[in-house]
Image 1: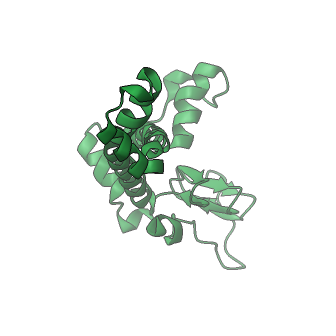
Image 2: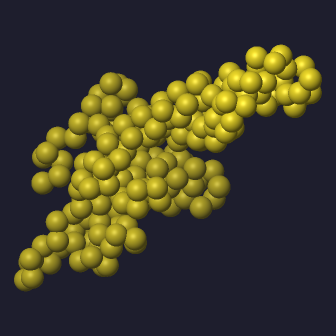
Length: 200
């Protein structure tokens, strides 16, 4: 989490005053006054252009971009694993105390089980929030693994893949740019371990 939060997402460097004007063919960000490299987007929350910007995360309150996407994916997957482990540990008390007690009545519990449920107390109810977090993060983690495997960002997916289907995309669906390699392994390597030359 801290690596995601405190690492540079890949902000486009702001040129010093008196820098040359951009050529007509290059993209120029009017808000932060920088030349935008390919796949860079301006974040309205951070007020800067970010290289290969995926999204501005509401959970970390920072941009997820070229240089910190691997930390974000690692954070999502470890929290998902922790929530899954919490769900696993709390399933038996939840099943024994809550489900059995509610569906079959408290009379169906043996005195030993009833005593265990009293000792476990609130731990029985840990299953519901842990499982909800686990399910949500499985979807979020799976989504980001799919994006990493295809070397796309959320912004690019929404603009070039989903947008034309909904009639709001910038380009027709047959004019989709190719961002990554055909090899999933090469896409993982390119996204999770970006070369420093891609930033400079």
